[in-house]
Amino acid sequence: SCSRAKDVTMPAKLPVNFFSTRSPVIDLFRGQLDYADQLRQDSEIVLYFFYAPWCGQSIAAREEIEHVASRLSDQVLFVAVNCWWNQGKCRKQKHFFYFPVIHLYHRSFGPIEYKGPMSAVYIEKFVRRVMTPLLYISSRSKLLDFLSNYEPGVVGFFEFNASPQPPGYLTFFTSALHSLKKDYLGTIRFGVVTDKRVAQEISLVHSGSVYLHRHANTSLIYPKDIMNFTAENICKWALENREMLVRWLRPHGGKSLLLNNELKKGPALLIFIPYNPLAEIHPLLDEITKVALEYHKCNKSQAAEPHLQHLGDSDSPAFDSSVTDAHLKFSETFPIAKYPCCNTVTLGVKPNKVHVPHCNFLEIEAALDSFYLQEHTFFQVISNTIECSNFLSFYSPFSYYTACCRTVNRHFLSFISSEKTIFQTPKVAFSSHGKKDNTQFSIPHIEDRNCFIPDLNISSTNITGLSCRTNKTLNLYLLDSNLFWIYAERLGASRSTHLKEFAAIVDLKEEVHYVLDQNQSLVGPTL
Image 1 (cartoon, rainbow, N blue to C red):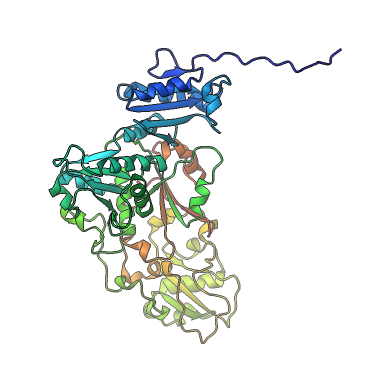
Image 2: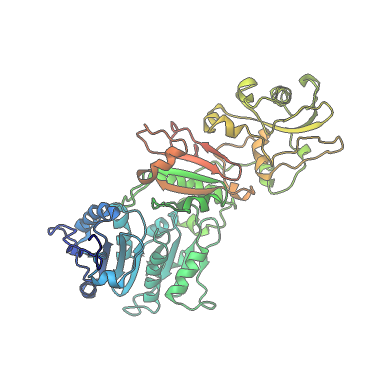
């Protein structure tokens, strides 16, 4: 008979070493979690690598962990634990939904979970931040370097000459660890100043004061009289008030709404650059940071950054910020009649009969010819240097039509992703169908005003305060092209390029995206 009285099962095979016996990583392949806890008691910094032997991602990350351990094993204890064997304590006590999992402990504080890329350089960078969560700032020059970084900076002032451990210092130290626990990207940097003269540069007078530096907005001092001075409160205060000029995106590779959630916030500038987190200098990142600072700098007098002005040399701005009086009045609402490039014309009138002294012949001809021909490829038909804001979908000799034209440099023609996206009729630019004679004025969308005014001679690099002069803010994101180049290729980047630098603007609402010519370098004026 083929029937069985009971199911026949084969017991799981005994686990074997996952790491080499010569590896600097201690491999507890039987899941001895209790022994792992004992090891932690004798070490200041411990990294736990929880793995499943069958997991492909665990196998791929094994080499990365060994590489980091070979560099830091004299300062950090690396322990790998098999959390899959059903007889091991790790499997019985831990309930992970994915593998591998990396936990770090700084003495008794932890676990701090690492959720970044399973790449050796990123893991090592995170481990080093856990090792030294505070950066010692000993001079004005180091303070300037710290505050000039694109990442938010929190500075605490503590006088160590009064006592071996000033009141509040341990709390501030723990708050830095809390920030790593809450934000695995480590976007907030914590520094400590012990010299009273250096602390006075940022208006810190009393020991125990905490300062949050912001580039485009007013910097803040922790309100001790309102909030208790605890590690959790300091971390929460810094996270809630930090200024994110540039945000890193690091998709984990699985199904995720990370990109979708960010793109739904509005138009996004995605910049792909090769990035080594362990490098001491990042020239390309510095260029992008300058652009971000100029874009968000709404106060041209730089009142938001008074401390940086006297700490360092600020006489050489990264961009030309010379403006005319008209340029300074962008926040006001003007009727179209004050814009010499915007004209309401009667359809059917020949170009030489339209008497608008402020617009040149090419601009009027380009606008009217686009009405007649209804050409969506009108760049090629009329001119390589004239662009109009809208196109007609039907023709009527009795209706009026408002158009704005501008001169476009040939350089920017390569910035367009495709004819399909650029030549769509904007929904918000101007009303064009059946406009009545008695309508004298029409207000363009606020972000369209500056672009259509040739008389102001706005330089393409003059983006100072642009985020405050528009009602469609552009969010800036960075991605490491060494890890996420596949996303750049899907946005239009070339696969054959040797230099993995790429930039694209994606606007989900308008269903368009623009691609920067890869032959141009990612420097300030180009961006």
